[in-house]
Length: 286
Image (cartoon, one colour):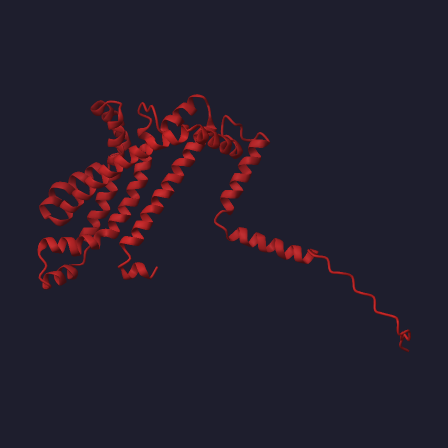
């Protein structure tokens, strides 16, 4: 027996409206967010920062040992607004630019001489291979004796750190040029100078750019040590003063600036690589 409604005015009751964000939908959304965070490159750094901040707030990480991220950000803004950070940053940038320019120029010149000429290799390469095994940071006392405690030893240390990676990579790049390319150039009637400028040096450009990236890394490392030599300005000067007063927040700010500068200069070299190596088929396939 079936139940029927004979009243024509009777209408069906409307179904209850569906609530947005039901439990299954929330679970799906949460899974998507977690999956996105799991695939993100920022997951681990953000998790470490969060743990660092929580540890600082509950007292597990005292400020004298390591300042909290919030305190570091506050100090960064204070140094930026006061002009103390920009002025010292410009001094450090000038030192790196000068030392890097000298080191890359010297390393490039020696690599060209040793890579193109057998006699040049005999004279230059053994000395460079011998010097590169020395811990150049241990030369700081000798540089102080030679050049004093002014700007010269700082720039010289940075230049020395940048010269060796430039020399090693460019020398290997020149020697790795395929002989058939040189023979092809000779068959077209190119002179020795034209072979060097049109075949050898363009072929060694990728190696030079790799060396430049290594040189930048060594330059920033050398700057950290060089600015410990009686510096009156620069990021190292800020770090030394902060160390004396146990200001770990300032130390972390300066270390962060070092890291950002290293990453930024490496990015600039990669842009230069894209422009200079656009003609290479292997580069276009990337």
